[in-house]
Image (cartoon, rainbow, N blue to C red; front, side, top):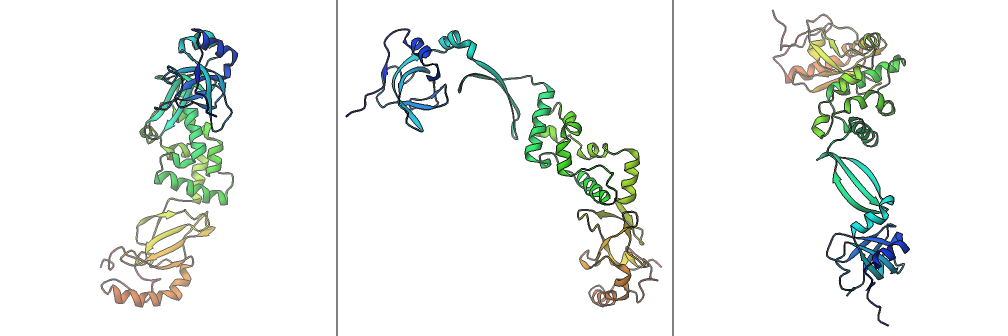
Length: 333
């Protein structure tokens, strides 16, 4: 038996009559060539092949008869409907919503949408967006994506690593772990997000300063004492300390710059010896140790023999504890 094509109702007011009888079947045409529609109830439906003349191009329909096939039903009987009729007769059911979204390329996307159920009757840009709404949206983006959504700087990462190490000794210091910062995001970040509209605006946020401002003066003093940023070595160089491993802060330094230092330098108020990455004149690691005194007594002589062969113009004393440290090939005379 041949399936009948979709039929139009004949009355000029048929669309309104059907819409009032079946308000959940008011339908909006989807983009594309095929006569496919979205019903107010969220279901998809399509006119059958060879559908009634005039219906296939109608922007809106009121559907009187439809099968229950999935994923897309077939429309058997329908009548055309206009947006003006929908506005006039169903206006009290139309909901207006402000849609605020973040796009990495375009930035803040703000629109006003007027909906009748699943149907979007109007979708226009919203030019003015309150700063508080933007801040709330971006705060939620950071919560979902993580702190990597924010611009990363070496200073901010270093501060967080130093604080993590210092807190292992003094837990009273502020917690700036990912979990803690995400929980308190409305407190420390949201106020800085006002005025942000594009990805480039985010780059202006100084995360290092924001995190540092969470520390009182006494806490900053405590941080500097427990986790100094740099260490002055015997040669006079001031070198950065690496706290990326909370359990083993490290210092990379050329071996010759440590001559004369008997014990491994310490941080954490003298509690934790630094892991020393001792380097050749070419800045290549030759030894890793947390016990400098033991290195001088034992491994140094094997290392010295190797380095003296590779770098004969450099200074390789017999007794490193009384030798003059140097940043040069040899000490100044």
